[in-house]
Length: 460
Image (cartoon, rainbow, N blue to C red):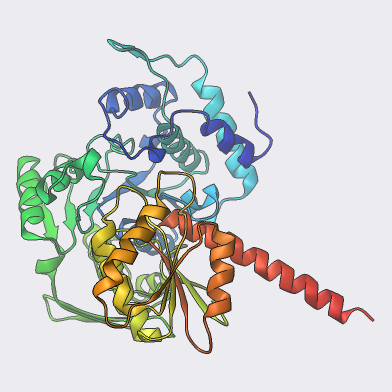
């Protein structure tokens, strides 16, 4: 089998079992590392051809990975970056520190992988088991980074850590961002249980870096690091103070390290949560000795990742953010209201079935004049009607409730938001990366139509 374009390869991959689409609990039959290890052995262990930093966590891991990759690349180190999910295009998952690979390189690596996969057979007591889509995408990332001679790679986990397909690498550093209740049917229904899953990316003797954590999560990481004889670097210990402000220019950050040094940055990636993500990345780079103050800090200031408080329009301001946990949404709303206030704005809101609908909804209600419930794609299960009913119940006790709309179609949801949002007020799209991707696509259609209308007007 040979592929002539990358989209054709992605369609082929999606023909395999895709656990990203499932919200239910998982079994050893599906999530397991022995099959992934056997697969990597069969294709020549490309994951051994570069130094890797492994990043896990409930929120901020994609942004932290992006900061790390930018910092490494700034020193002239060819650095692959593997993140998920994507917002608009699968190419976003496999980049050179945020820059797309040429399609020729993607297709070449895809054909290398498919050729090496020939003859792969995995059988156990449950019978024959073919790889999952995520295992194949992860294998593709490893082949791509090896095939293009990357010296380093920053690898983000897909889900959890212990049984994640990425947990087959031996990294030079393990990085864990804040832990929240998420994917509880899969990872467990308590912070210690979820932290326990994430902690299993810690490898013997490999340094581990953790962001500021709840005490019950920190305890889990400390114990696992001790068990693995891995040195633990805790951002809460290493940083004395972290001050940040969201402005139209970007995210202003001042990091006071425990030694007394102060790092001042203006990040292109807005949102107060980015201050901590950036500080964690700096701690990792400094400790690993891949840090040159001016070069590194300038590089981190340019880091961007789709769907992280991303502004796609100025009139009206349209902001896309994939916040899908309570704390990530809280941080987003703090930053959003710093820029646009808490009056007159509209939110297009959609969440998947396995998220904390109630607490997320209660954060949104007092801050928006209009809430439009939309379907967050079809990739995973969601129930917009149930979410709309929840909103209707929650506003009953409010003195000045927002106006509620149910418009499942993302194109129509964006059209409604743009029609009803007046003056300088803003539109926020949040709750899901899948919804964010659909709204970006919808806005591109709007731009194309406006461009065609201008062409018609310009004709003599």
